[in-house]
Length: 281
Picture 1 (cartoon, rainbow, N blue to C red):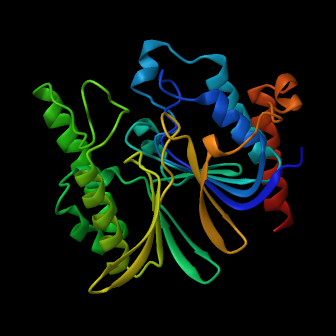
Picture 2 (tube, helix red, strand yellow):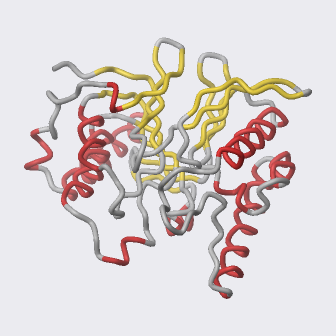
């Protein structure tokens, strides 16, 4: 079956390494598309849960698939989230075609778009958006405050997660919290003159035009792969929410080359591609 060509595909809150991750379904989805750009918008790898030594083959295959896409020319942006916290130490590092950062801005079809995970609103859920008016400096301040708050709460045996439910961690979120989160994200984007803002973190897929007294912004959330199995796709000059449960992808399986290519080969291919680009530039 022919793969769908996309300008951009956005995934978030995959939580590889957790029992809740639908890795096989995600692998099927990734095998069905041919994106020019793949944006991994945070919480792709659940570093905290990996301490339990749970990382089955299907989860590794997802990583290999991402590297395979990069080796074939897909530009991959990995935006770090709170669950893949260790990767924030290597912000602004390029691994061949894979670029690691804590936020990304793009100009697409004349629209300015901000991509970030969204957990920085955990610092002060109701009032943190004003700090982001200071651009990258505000982001850096919030990231540091977030880390400080998490560490402080940890001393008292508490967790810093506004969407956290101790009984069903990846279950239903409080609709009022989600609505407040969405509005604060949109407010910040409008104040910084972005046309669109794309995030994750809330695990609540959404596409909504949000207006304030200062303007309007298209709010986009890619959802998750622990419950909703959703993604954002951009093609033909428009964004749409992809829902796995609404698609029939049984004909797609893991690409054949993944069975024979190991991670070292994939990484070498990406590095070689990047090296060739630099020589030709």
